Length: 304
Image 1 (cartoon, rainbow, N blue to C red):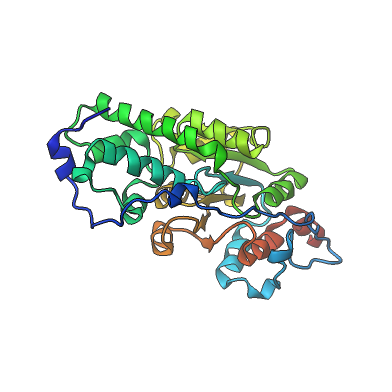
Image 2 (image 1 turned 45 degrees about the vertical axis):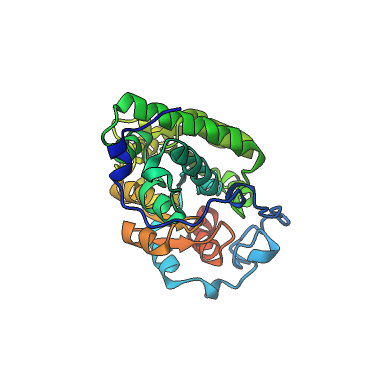
C-alpha cells in the first residue's frame, strides 16, 4: 500500500473528525419511487409540470429566482449534466473510499478525514489536481497511483449502492419528449462515468460524454462545457447545466451557461458563492418544475 512522506500528512490542519463508521456507505436510503408519467403541458392547460405525486406543488411556491432565470432561457434548447452528485448521490461513496484509503496510507497522521474536509477540499475536484493537493511532497506518479486505487475502490462499492437522484428518470423522459440536446460532462475518470451511466440505464440517453481529463483543462475551467456545447451544437443562451459542486458550477458559469445547483452533498453557501442561478434539492423540486414549465419549448411555441 502507498505510503506518503511524513511531511504530506502534516501539510493539512484538519479539524478532529468523528470516528469512522460503515453507515456512510451502507446506510439504507430507501427505494426511490417514481410515480406516474409526466403531465404534458399545452397552450390550453399549462398547469405546473408534475411528474410525481410528491412533486405536485403549485407553481406559485417556486422562488422568484427561477422565474428570472426562465425569462432568459426560453425556449430551452439543451441540457448538460454533471454525473457524480448530480445524476446520483455518489458523494457518500466517494467520501467512504477516500476516508478509508487515506487513513490506510497514514494521511493526517491516520486521523480519518471529515465530511466537511471532503466537501471543501475534494468534492468535484479533478484527480490530477487532488493528487497534488493531498500529497504535495510525494512523487506525482505515486500520488496518481493512490487516486487510481481510490477510483477502483469506488467502482467496487458503487454497483450495490448507487441510486438516481429523485425525479431523474422523469426529467430524462421530459427531455426526450421534447427532443432536447444533451450531454454528460464530468471530471470523473471515463471508467467511472461509463459505469454510472450504465447502472442508471442512461448510456444511450447521452449522445455525448465529456471527460475533464480528456480536455485541455478540466473543471473548474470552462473547457469541458464549451466542448459539450460545440459537439451538440447548442447555444449557451438556451442551455442549462445541472451541477452539485462549486468546481462544476464555476466551470459552467465561466462557459456562459446558467447553472442549477443540486444540494445533494455540498453546502448551499458554497454553491451560491460559485455562481449558481438556482438551487434545488432534487429533480422533483417545485422550483425546478416551475422553471421547466416556463422554458418548455413546446409551450413557448404554443404561446408564440
